[in-house]
Length: 152
Image (tube, rainbow, N blue to C red):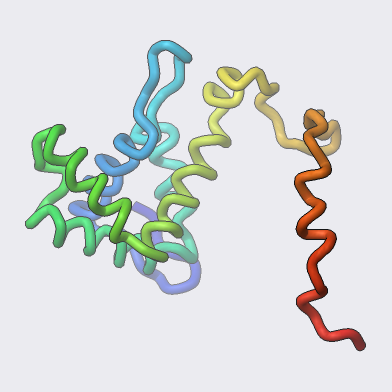
């Protein structure tokens, strides 16, 4: 567990267990690609460390999850967890979105995950990353619409 730098909040042991179980469902390990799940020890430690300003939302989301679970999400059978997680995905709202963002950011920072994607595990700068050119005509409707701001 880690204190939130802004509010001093931390997750309880029960919330931490539920978050780990949920993270494993959000991004499960995949032996085909040789990648760990988001519940991997290293990745999950990063998730806890990086909750920071999202700790309150995480606690709200985990409270919703516990409510849907009728108690501890982590203690449910795997099949039941999957059912509850699917329902939670539909009902979680903004708190779940914040939690999801932290999980994804931490997951895609892991060197093993970056290697599986064919990326060199390093920060994007100063070398940068090459991005394939896409179909720029997809932006035409946006370019044609009227401005959404007031001119000065």
